[in-house]
Length: 554
Image (tube, rainbow, N blue to C red; front, side, top):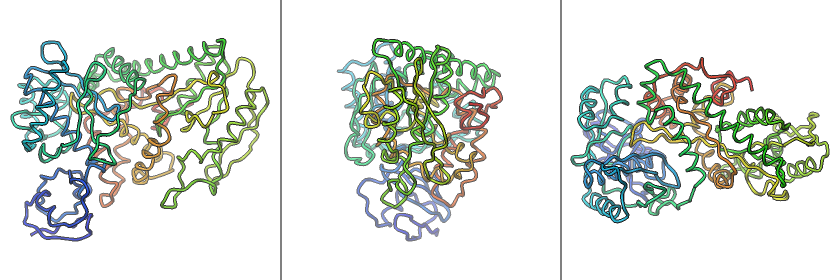
């Protein structure tokens, strides 16, 4: 017999060796408003078919958890793939990226044509049929060579490239009926769990919509994101220029010794975009309704500060004279900071910024006055006046950078015509393979972990623990304004994870196995293993990545 400690109930039960999690679940009585989808076993993500042969700690998860959502959404992507394959055996399905509270997908039926609305309805019917049949997802663990041989016969070149570039002895793949696929994380135990989803035509492809994270019995609300989609399309075009469509392609190029050139091309493409933005601002500054202020925002670890500095250089090249400050310097004193329900400080709240004071200073600057702007002392938690004075003269433009820069309330007394808004995002266009997207938030989480660790601000465990609060604040205070931007800039590039791997692995290993944060650290370590590590020696000192791995001279 083995002993299983359940985190949900804080109780221990005994089971026969080899009992699966799904068979253990009925023994633990706790409130389950939504179906249990997966679990953490000793703080590592596992599917419900996992069998325990030794005593373990288990925490059961539903859709409201990150891991539960991941398992559901991966399984839903497999369901879509199988339904289309059942109807169109020669089809090619690519799950491209999360967007608009769903997944954007492209489908080629095998004859070079896309689905019609009538054919899409047949796919929906097939998906509903597979759900009603409650077909099990079966996991197979085989030697890497055997998996490569299997996917080669199936013609899945994307998976072959990925697996050939990963140094594993054994790998897992999944089967749904007679359909085979590869997923880097666990899947549901069967199709019957997937009651909530929708499939619609969207921008030349399909949008696979998923449940709401807070109310899994309902679809997540749809939000049109045309500008975000355009940035994704632009980044995909950049990848096409470099001849890369998935991580397997990147790894193969790195193995051929092409990493240095890929870094140079990626940096050049980003600099080209910054130049285009600077030229547009310059045009607007000299228009009949001149721009006076550039508002720059983005979520945590998107690279706002470094982008602001690089944009300043390009604005100077246009003949302008930029001056800048951060909204962080207008933070209220620490004791006046809004608090979260648990009593901790809510540093992402809009009222953390003294927006009235900030806007008054901007108005005075636009009138031509000399203004002494504050500097926030993050050690003492006090806003200080240290003699930093700004004046907005002819040929100058003011850059304001911070997480609330696009919030309309921050500059609601200023004419709209004088503003130019920039939103910095981390849109990861490349995928592991055709069916495994890279979560954009993981990109930023890795950046934040390294930045916090290198600055000595927080340990990796503390950064991971605080990440859910950061994400909630972003949804509430930042992302809701992104489509108001005049332009979006994507701060990621194709070799980022390969460069981050060498820096992040040792830091992630500092997270203790016996704490809840280990599940994310383990997941990120596992994910980074898919990337061939690349040295940062060719990363220029002005790169956005340098602000996270060190070595920046901006």
